[in-house]
Length: 508
Image (cartoon, rainbow, N blue to C red; front, side, top):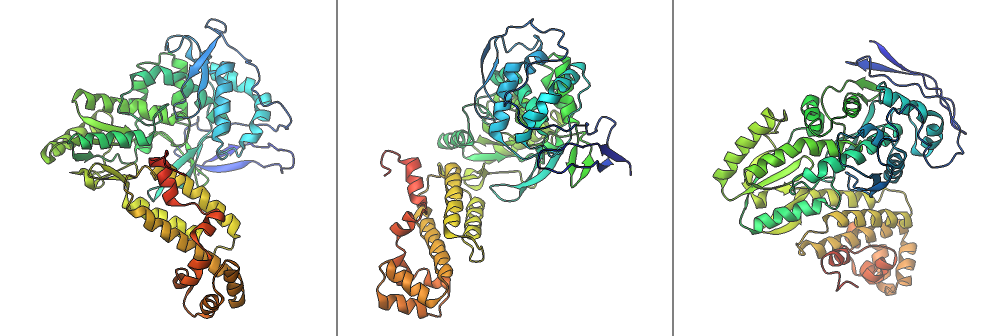
């Protein structure tokens, strides 16, 4: 088996010197190599160094700057005036100091783990001061080779895992800079039914759009699932669509190299002849560029639909129409875009029977799906596990963090009925944790009487042989660990969070 050498002798203050790394190579091309990165030291400014290196057309374009959207939906960056014009020195615009500074701010804000070179974001600026001129020169010369991405699996909100590709920090910066310049060129032409990774739009907007179509009487859903979309994108199909609006061949070459940079899985380097790695700043824009042709085809046929990244649903009025649309759209995806449709997960069904972005629909009302609710309960059980040996303060902190994040996304559910029951169940789980923490009978009696429980009731509960789960709903625990007391300890109420979302004017 041939081996790929990466001569890394980089050392950071307080960090041991790393020796050369040898990774097995699978289906690798000569270009899929790790670059040599020399050692640097800390202690420099946090701003990017000035533009250096060859720039044959420097000074030809305008130098002032204007706002540009971040394709991932993040903060607004800066760009050079005169865009979008795909004919005017795009590479110079991408590598301009103003654009790179805006890109670096976004990369820092997104944080993220280190790539295959193990360089954390905190160390990048020091590295850039020494190496950026050479990197910039190699990009202009067409010889720059990105590092492979590191593949990790992350859990999905709806269950299961999703493969995530983590580029090196320098490649994240360059990808972000490319995305900031290309987004204004492509975004104005995207469909209004495309909600993914676009400034001012969110998954909630896509869900609301589906609800609106259901209210209008389109109650049969064509739910087509793209099988491993990001891993199966054909590079030639994608590049053909990019080249329709981007005519700077240097930029096209650079994007192509990012697509073919390779991926490291479990320490092994794999070639990437297909696919767009999830996790890079450029990938969301590329997915929208490719699937925009699907959007345009659906608009041409006057269909009602909503799409967020590779998740989309088409709404029609009858089962027969839905089956006809499913067959024709499957042919379009497979023949025109070279994408595969997962027949096992795809279906034509009543709108009550489908899920979209983690949400289901009851009539014309939004609710979270059963799978999402099951995953929520499982996570709460993990955070309130009796065997998790952490303090209650830390447990409350993690519960607060999770509840705010979960309700921030799934709180748009319009069904109130399950909310009080979930709140009751959550408080019972927390009472269980306190009861287990007190352990001994005398401790339980002392703590309960401190909280206002009658002595006789506290003693009866403390001496009981019933299990902690049963006692967590007893009179003793409820009279001592009241709802208000739990709130004072930092426990959030799911009901309060829901009311804040749906009735902010009445929320306390």
